[in-house]
Image (cartoon, rainbow, N blue to C red):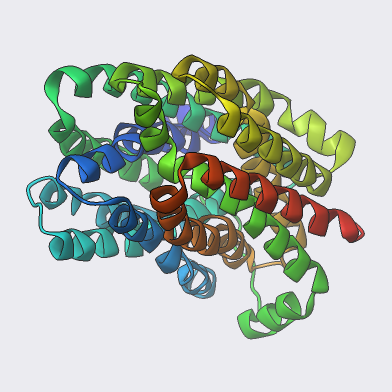
Length: 384
């Protein structure tokens, strides 16, 4: 065995490429997502307009199963990923130089169209490379939490000193580094499958409807928080550094959850962990409603790992468990569509109006209720 072959084998065993992908992709997201709503407000958009822009990603996530079907049918899961990343990040270069709402609307639509399949394709490729050891997904995805945490605190500090324009350059650069990492993703064993037959089998499985509806409702709670948290912090009196610190605390809270996720899934099962995530989301939203100052909100961010990380990690594993063989990318796209598509679209469209007309207290009360309802729906069915 040559040195080069030995290094390639070791890299495949350690799954370096997925780790690098998650790190750079979440550096990109952490430099952009927490601050884009502040940019929208700074150029004069109102909360309802901001809610519409935030909801676009959710509406267009609904088409992500089509991306998944294409990836599964043509066996392009790994090669399609860099293409959609480029489409998701490059329009940001123009987004920072316009104040016209309709041009912003068009650019965000374009970005959202390509953004929709990024996570499902990446998760599907990573899980396929893991094979039967899918509980190890958390050890790959945890690098996303590291990237998010480092970038949010760094750019919370940077935008306060250099302005929000910085995010429109860093996001595409870090995104393209993620695309390069995606090109190096390990090749998984190909499964010959009748896609149409597998799709019918998936749609007839009653467990899917309960799983997707419950996850979607819990996702609505998360979407309301993620979409309006920066504005909420600003309204509490926080500056850019505190906002960045809040996201960093959230990322740090993901690390122990990801580290223990394999044990937790083996011990309690992925479905039970999703139910627990919904319950913790409900408590977290109620605490935001009661928080009197930014410092309180910073402390509440420690619950993020038990909410978001548990929902995503367990949901990805549950979707893979329920997926017919050969339809893994489609299954991940359906989960992504529910949690980051339908949930984001509904939550941000309605949430912007609730925040504008009734304040953040009503927003977080609604978020707590929908999370509790989603957990209740999931708890009604058998694990199967």
